[in-house]
Image (cartoon, rainbow, N blue to C red; front, side):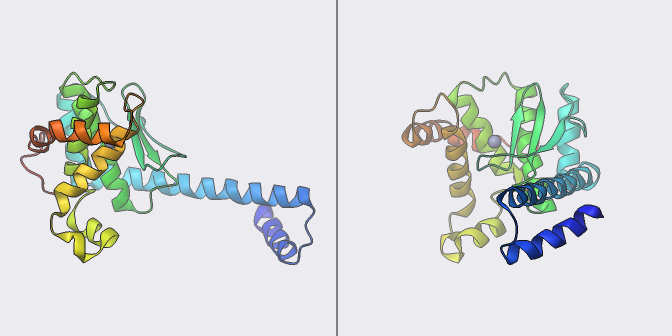
Length: 214
Ligand SMILES: [Zn+2]
């Protein structure tokens, strides 16, 4: 309560240029902390909802469990990310959800589904994440199966003109960007080449789903 009051006072002073440099720094850092807190709380709410109610997330969790993995509330972690990504998968640590990049419950659901495809691949196949072909394959599957490239998403982002080849083009583009972030990838050209090499095989491998349905 005190903080809210202090923020109001500071906001007024801020507008009229009455804060000292030190007060202004404190005010800004307090606002930033509150924003982090709000984002963290919301991210955890999205996460819990999806773990409990999203058919895709629950299905993936069960399929991962069947092959010896374990994704649960304690190894899906909300945190702040600097890079342009909404989530990450680490073989030992689990799944990271970028609380400052996730803007809705369904965006969180797509992100969780994406990272869970990586978790599934990690348990199911002997993935060597330093090998670009392996990485590319999992990214292609993750983007395709998670719903990130569903038609509506693409329409909103690129307008109706690019709608035609939609899904596959989107999967290719997203997988290329992810592979480019691999330390072993030299440049975009290299990423595009690797994605191309494995595309058909990995795109058509929809396990554990029967087909692409999201
Ligand atoms: Zn990925």
